[in-house]
Length: 245
Image (cartoon, rainbow, N blue to C red; front, side, top):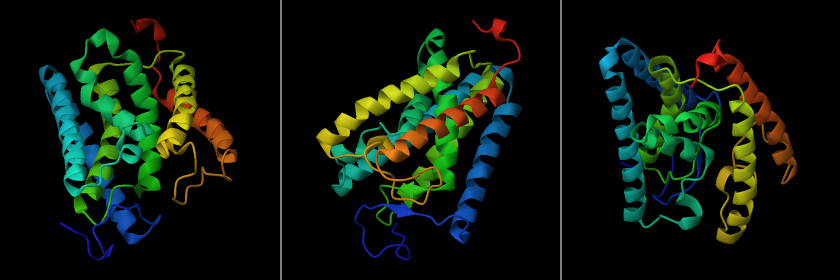
């Protein structure tokens, strides 16, 4: 259960994987393979089973979410300042869990938020991984990379196989919501002593998008995130907006 070669004790702590290290390359190869398999299977199954497949993926995400928190509680390591699902990728993961179980007409913005934030956040997390709840346990390592693979694959599947589309101004709406979340989380972090979405201090990982200290890096993030959202929008937007309800 424990990865003794990586850490000497079972305390929950932060764990990073060095960019381009052998372990990083093997893990990223496995993540890319998982994303490919999820999308390939979703492409090959019959049309009548595509919604069932999306719900099956959602159930897996729900299972990982529940086991993750139960395991932390069992270890006595669950803390309010660390485990609320309000990191960007955690929010995307939650959307994967329940988007298929709400009325179809109420899915649009959730899909758009997931498409932008899941793909951008997932790729960034995989390229510069920081496993917060590690402690030498294999489960937390696997769960981290599985979750981030899924928040990339899930919105692509919804777009390609279930016909969900980005609306014309979805990119600016998502960027505005991200800014609202940031301003809400700064005082919450101050209250809890937390650092959700890393808006109170930069993440403890070598990330090229982190420039300077607080609040300088946040200003750069505003620009970088906006550029990335626009890039994802240009790649993922439909050819004909009039066909979107």
